[in-house]
Amino acid sequence: MSRKKIHEDQKYIDGLLQNNSFIIQAIYDKFAPKVINYIKSNSGDADRAQDVIQETLVVIYNQASEKKLQLTCPFDAYFFLLCKRKWLNKLKKTSLKEVTINEEVLSKDDDAEQLAIESSIFEDKQALFNKMFQKLGAACKDLLKATFKIKSMEEVASTLGISYAYARKKKSQCIGKLTKLVQESPMFNQLKNEL
Image (cartoon, rainbow, N blue to C red):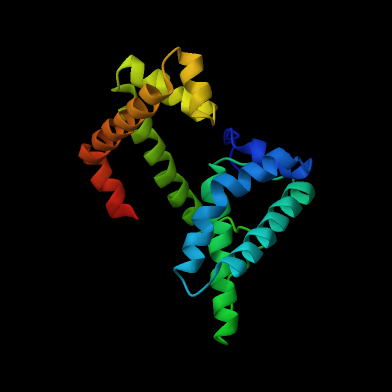
């Protein structure tokens, strides 16, 4: 295996290994909705999606504990790919077609290539977001950064020394401006075409 840099999302793998309830909850909060939406739009329902998520977390845990899994891509892409493959396997089994995908192990060929493509798209989206984020004014950046870290808008307003009403209004305006910057970028259309 080539010497790739360990991705910062390795914290999710380590958290699973340590049975860290905060990390596990963060995985469900941040990454499960995308999987649930995918499965619901592909012949499934929320209960079956939850089963796939739990099974996938067990697979990741086993890979981490037995094979010392080291993440070299965003957790989101890796997790989504495994869930997607597991779901497609279940669909193949129920339609009595031969199952050729082994979701327990990512091969070094096709699977790694697919993971790299999905990871690349994810990273390109992040890069586009970061680039457009930098174009925002200082007040917008400060407000949005605070909302990324602090859940409560009351706390954000207090931290920044502004009123709650102003914080909510300004956040909405800043998100609108950021969205517009992203959508007007030529890179946005390229990314849309890759999906």
